[in-house]
Image 1: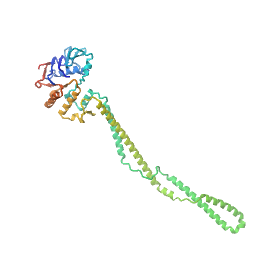
Image 2: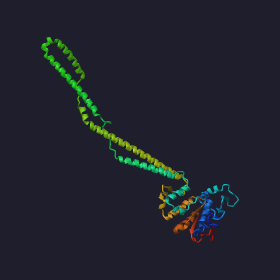
Image 3: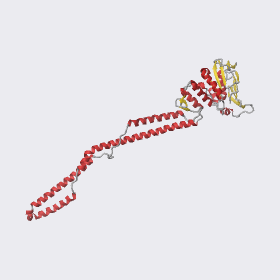
Image 4: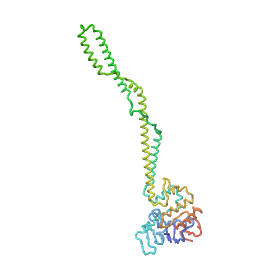
Length: 405
């Protein structure tokens, strides 16, 4: 669907114009302030509806009470009228027999979203990104998502740096107890054994002394009978005590353990430090991987939303600072590549209403001017292009708000 005829009266800088396009390329030429831009404004004001009306403060030509513009699209005719009180829209079938009850809905169904390729190229990367987002609802807040991703990325980087700072973790020393050995405890055990051995020696000394005394008093048996009996009883008790105590214990093992206790404890401490270091590194690795999953989740959510969104061209994606096409930043393309891409983007917004507007066509240069013209023919789009001067042969010339050629 294209514009078959445009009629505008007292709209912006136009007095009265009627333009019937011949072919897919419509060049609107004339000097500055002649009304060229008003021709494109009239198209935009009729088809873009509420958005256009909200952005244009004075659609009526200065000094007039009323303005109107009519666009014949073949299958339908749309007329928008402006007065001091407001605006009205009427949409009829092409033959005029049917008037649509919801005219704005009819135009909205055409997806009439105008993006000027020339203006789009002239914007900086962030403005280009915002221009696309203003026209396409991808269902997510890319800026909020980018901010959250940056936060997670910084947090993950910090965790990674902490992990690197730990360095390589050595192996745990084998055959070392889990806890440090108490030297005091071993010393206490040694004292107990030594006291017991001393007691055994003392008792044995007593036994030897008693035996010697018995032997020395054999000759005195008679007189010492009573004493012998007593000594025998005592000796028997001592003997029983000696038997109950058993043999003396060897302290060599305890002495060896005491000598090695500091080495053992040093190894225990080193093992504990290694385990703590390994545990901390494992914790940081887990935290790093968890943050990576969150970042991957945000990236997938973004890619899924973009995949579901009705983006203007295949291969388009968004970065924090701009847009990319097939992974290449839009700003890095050549002049002609950017023009072709911008035309593709503009065309995609109007698959039914095959109309594209290009303002400031004089700034395009000869090569891009030809690209625009060729695009119109090759893709069957009607391109309305504004230039300063006398145009290129078949141009529609505007002077003082009217068509002169």
